[in-house]
Length: 284
Image 1 (cartoon, helix red, strand yellow):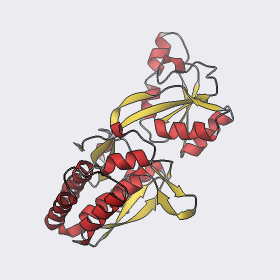
Image 2 (cartoon, rainbow, N blue to C red):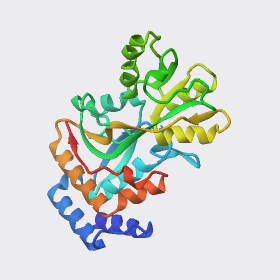
Image 3 (spheres, rainbow, N blue to C red):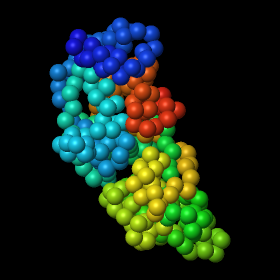
């Protein structure tokens, strides 16, 4: 089969150590293609929000192309199952509605697999979640995370992000301490959240640590990461609720890619620790 061979060749060129041998990965992917022939030779649509450097973003050298960990990992799944990928860029809060409307085959876009979101799609986990705390350089307000250090301050967040209810949950604790609740400013993308801190409209912003560190690297004299925190979620790819075949096929391919060491190699390639890899679990 051409696709498993392509995956193996790509892995070897990247210097990816395979768990047993190239033949073992080929064997697993070959078996998956025979078990799920409906994907072989097809082109599937991946919905993504291309404003999270490291995960998915526009290629600065060619703005018609996408790049990042999620993009590469999805390609690895396609190589294993035999499909190619086209992309559907949308706002973050439109990712799952786009999937539900049939305008995308799957979602892979640094989206956290929560029980609430699983009402709209089935998820397969593949990475752990660590959030960073973006604040002004020097952290003059002494903000330390999603806790009562936010009382009386303004937090920028992306519409639809899991951090929104977490920040809202701090309000009761602030009231108990006789302090004002944090105010939330909602934006459609990371860039606007960053800008709100740079202009002083917001005092803090929470997103995955990689995104926060990219913002700091771009504005080292104005911004800083006040600390990372582990969130009780996992990053997952989403497939339609009514497509058990895709759920099982993608889970099988992801497991094969992980066992071959490909996901860890891609994590390192895009600046993430290998320890972020999460064993595939279904959340529905």
